Length: 357
Image (cartoon, rainbow, N blue to C red):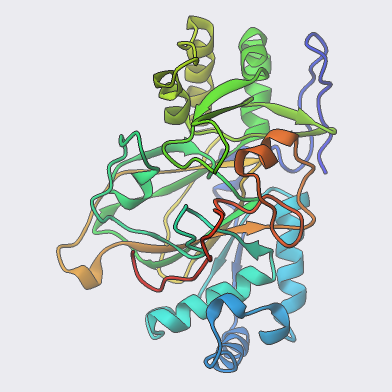
């Protein structure tokens, strides 16, 4: 794992290690892209066929044997947790697979990385990133992924690793970008160390209506979280901006607003961010604690069968980084492997929807 700065206020030092990367140095390389071979596709299709009589949610690595790919996915998991924190797997033949076959193959791959956890209070273990008229500005939901709106740099709410499988691309737009948290931290530390301090304090966040029983409609967490020698983040700017709508939450101070603006400006620096265009059959995997992701707005096709559609997994990884208490308090539930269990709610049985719900 990467060397970390000291946590003392006046003794912070730059982050070193492979998690600290710059997009402009990686854009011309292909070391972060791994292509499936024809033999590996055959292996996946055999594994899928063996699971057709069982629920997708019940598929485990034991039920989805991958003799040659097991080692590959072990290396991918290591790269996500100990390396740069992202990978792009390319070449799944989704053009000739049914939705169910694609979902089964994707789920099986995901189970070699971690345990899928619920992505919303309805218990969806498989998310559908698709425009169904969602409102990016809705104060009572995380509706941005169900819209065509631009999604600024952020992390998802409840996972060690976020996976996106591209089934179909948009007519135009919908481009993906990722950026290293460590690179943002180092740049801010160099330019505005006073603003780094602002983002190392607990900051109020809006739950946007997704409130577990017994919890407040808001919670507190730093943007730069230094814990047991590791730097992580949880960041959705609009959840911070809307937190003061709740009783007892103060307005953002000018210093905090400036710090958040600086964070986003640095994240969008073309020298730091890595831009990529999905093609059908791509799987983007990112360490959700150390890598932020973004999406441009897009224009979609009119025909329902042609609209942009990604399948999303939130994965709890047992080898994941040590987390402070607020990560667990945010949800109050644990996955079988002891990591936070996403948006699991009491009385709701998680399931795998094969279509947008």
